[in-house]
Image 1 (cartoon, rainbow, N blue to C red):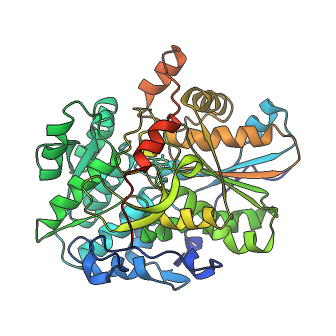
Image 2 (tube, rainbow, N blue to C red; image 1 turned 60 degrees about the vertical axis):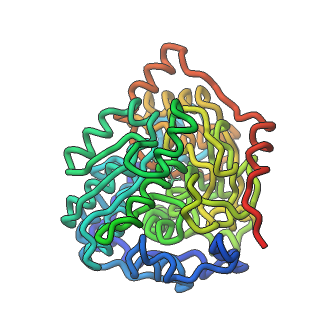
Length: 447
Ligand SMILES: Cc1ncc(COP(=O)(O)O)c(C=O)c1O
């Protein structure tokens, strides 16, 4: 019987992040300046990001050294365990082996802290006093609040209005770690005021909150912006998940057949699965599966096109699978998956056919989450539950495969969602094709 859990010692925390772009079969489409339609000049990002992160964003180097101060902070919770879900396997009566990489044990409860720590570190190094950011589910905002606390920075979080009200305790966590939090759209920024004038009752969206956070940073000399997903440097930082997983599988003598992760902006999925790209290129039968909500199906139903990352059109144009920046998804409980686009790196991998994607409605996701919680004990975040559900369905095929999924976060602040599911009050929502088509008509024209 193999061990059920693999812990690595502190000295096995990787010393460099992996940049998958170095191994992609073809180059990725560059970010564009929306005004000129030309590839972005790194200097154009300087008002909102520190120099070191801009370099990482543009880098083609395979390895990016992890600063010692960041590795020291990682020691609080890393390396994270790789766990064999034997009780779940038994309940499913499957002959597949299911493993999960448990990122939920970070102080903030998810993988988001991996990049929050790195981003806070580089901002501090370059003399920044305050950072702004947006948050959907609150996982990212709380991670950033803790990272700022750790490196002595002020932190302002624009939290998507629906989550702000659904998840008051995520807000409390941000306050505990010294952050300030505003429901977005807010009246603190011009973009927020413009949205409120047009849509006073909007539940908000990540695109709207990003617009507010970018505007706030661009207008204050001592302030920069941080993003919890989508951008290349975030995916690079998250590669620590996949690098550790590879080592842990090696120690077990396991070769994965199927790797699964949920996708919002794409950071836990990209960080977990894309370090396996060299294996995927060598072994076509290795499957890498991205899971998203049917209510926000960017990879499964979106267009691969240049689009803005935010509703106020303040960000560069990124080539991604997108539902259109005006797309406002239903207020599903997986708030962190309510984003209209995907990381360009993940989109590029999807376009090359290196990854596949699937989607689920909320109740199916929560059924999977309950089965997991009742066997393995851990209660997954609604976002994470998408990966859990897909792993269960893969294992039901009963084909003796080794399935590994990213357990991106816990759901301890998501009890309202669990209560609603248990009471049969959770609505399934599939975004209508016509609404997607209508939204895609407004994609920016690229010369
Ligand atoms: C626990 C958890 N998993 C996944 C996600 C989705 O983000 P990403 O696709 O960047 O990993 C979020 C976003 O908030 C999250 O909180």
